Image 1 (spheres, one colour):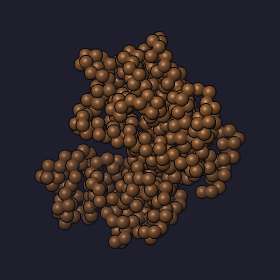
Image 2 (cartoon, one colour; image 1 turned 120 degrees about the horizontal axis):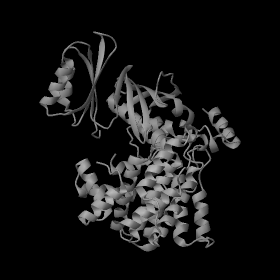
Image 3 (cartoon, chains in turn cyan, green; image 1 turned 90 degrees about the vertical axis):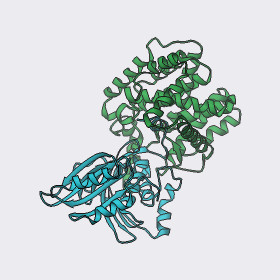
Image 4 (cartoon, chains in turn red, purple; image 1 turned 60 degrees about the vertical axis):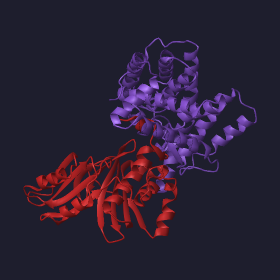
Length: 221
Length: 291
């Protein structure tokens, strides 16, 4: 924990977990989608559902989906801003199994037609964990540039991806592998110490056996 | 690496002939691999954000729940009218703490220090001190570093999360951080700083976290004022030469143990205390209907 986690962060209140964390989940989701959100189905769970109204959790999530960060003074106005941009929002209750008490399921459609479904958890302070991406397990915090590779479950993909990153001098901070079934659809989540350049992302996408690639960058849009 | 004892920060401070705040800063810069200048700029921004939040208090705002808003203005008017029971400094601490707590509840931008729920304590003490005593910006920034160092040890050896250690971990920690910072500003030596922190924590041990409807409003907002005043009392005692019979690091360890012993129903779960009073339950029923 660094001293600016103790005196800080600068954030819009009232709650680091229910407000700041919620903004961050929305923000990370929008970044992963890779384009503006046209339609968002926001399904709340647990304490997000029970106390979210008083904590402004819904405003916070929408603010994040609009690309706002946790210190943006426009967070309380996010519904109006979303309406002006023509973003369609609906809220509901999520049915999740074994989820963290502060969880939300987001189903997003982008302005260019991209789709994304994620489950985000606000795990304390303003820290978050993205626990599912498109139905598959994942675990990453949004604190590092994060590469998510969807591929077929065959030997060699992890090696291919990591050696491509090594070639660009990118250090992998954490690496996780999940799969639906043996030989089926698999996902690889890599948190990196450096940003992954666009040409590497393109190369990865073109590799055979790799279905699609998502990338969360710390850089501003 | 985060410090595990305040005595350790004091020891390095004496060995190197540097003030404690500088030891905290240097250690953090090494850890984050940033320069002291970068770190200093960041802390300056934190102080600006605190001041900005204080200035932008809006008495018209009411929180989404309808429970919070407008009390800071009442205190301000009371202070301005010259009706205050206490001196200007304490009056200002009370006013700023309540205002900041309300701003947080009303979705304004604040600085979590160490948490959003306790965001009023440190700015109330430091900004009031700066206004009343006319000290330099640099000194206040140094005091913030010291506060952060104290908070680091608390986070390491006790807790700064209400769900983990009750309210002593939030308002208690903020008050302890502010008491050390204030003692430094008053010219206290390391020993006085450590005594202030020890005295402050001892007076807030065991405080529970049982807010109404799980919201950072009742009793959190007003408790910021009590935390701020407690910090001032502790610095006052320490500057008078009063010592804590129990050394600060042992007090912090006690705080950690007590935090774990507070039953979970009183650690931000809404299952006991103020959270289950008739009035709180009526309020929750009304909120759930609006979902």
